[in-house]
Structure formats: C-alpha cells, structure tokens
Image (cartoon, rainbow, N blue to C red):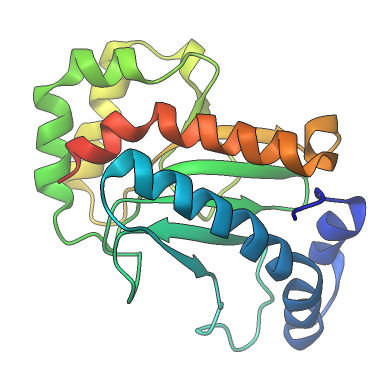
Length: 206
C-alpha cells in the first residue's frame, strides 16, 4: 500500500552523479510508483474500456547527466507508452505532476490535434480551471488553465500539431509541501479523479 511521498523522495534530485541518483530513484521512488501504478491501472482499465499497463521510466538513454525528474506512465500498450496517449505521475525536485500526456514521439500528433481543434469547445469545457497545461514535459513550467482562454488553447493545439517537438500535457501540479502527498490513500484518490476527469480527452485521441 502506497504510504505517500516524503522529503527524502524529492531530495533524490539533489544527488550528484548519474549512477548515484539512479540508485536512489530505483530504491526510493520506483517501489512507490509500482504501488500507485498498480491501483491506477485497474481503475483506468475499468473507466477507459481498455486494459491498461504500467510503465516505469528507466532513463536508459542517459549516459552522463542524471535525470531531473522521474515518472510512471499508464497506457493501453504493454510494449511502450511514448507513441500513445497516456497518463503519468511523476516528480521533479519541488512538485509532483499528474498528466494526461501527448508527447512528441506520438506519430499521429496531427490527427489528435485536429480532433481536439474540431471539438475545441468540448476540450476547453472538459479541462478543469484549476489544472495546468504543459507544452514540454522536460520543463517544470506550465500554464494555469484559469489564466488562458479558448483562443490560447487553440494556439497551443495548433503548435502541438505543427511543431515537431511540441507536446500537450494537461493535469495537475502538487507542490512538495502539500500535505496530500504524505497520505498515500488521499493522493491515489486525487490522482484517480484527475485522470478520470481527463478521460474524455484520452478517448478523443483515438
């Protein structure tokens, strides 16, 4: 049973050296990802109508620089998630993120963007105003949905369609000192409701 995140988990990203930081990620964080992910996979399988599978980031391409964040992904494809619409839970050094994620590796980015643009009103209404949107999963920065209008969202989706490296991630940021992170049950429920509220976008992506 997931017990929550601790300061020690966030401090992982202050550890110098690729091998040393990866050892801490594997020892401290990945077991928690397994606990969270197994629960969320079951929930999302039921809600999405597809069997969903857990993937935990391996950071295998890294040879020098240690990762600045780490995450789990949940997707309908057992073999991999990057090419598909998927959900993520992960950590930077100062916050947890929960995303519905469309990243640049998706081969059908254009099709998904056009589907969203064709249903812009529905997309805009689906996303809760206390959520955030990111256009690059490598960066911490994200736009508050409460501070963007429908035209801003349209421009984000056009950029997602037309710029090869552009991405579209929507969800929530939880700062490291938020007490919900220390309560495993409450956090898992919070992640579940976040993902379920974004399920219409997931289904629109196919």
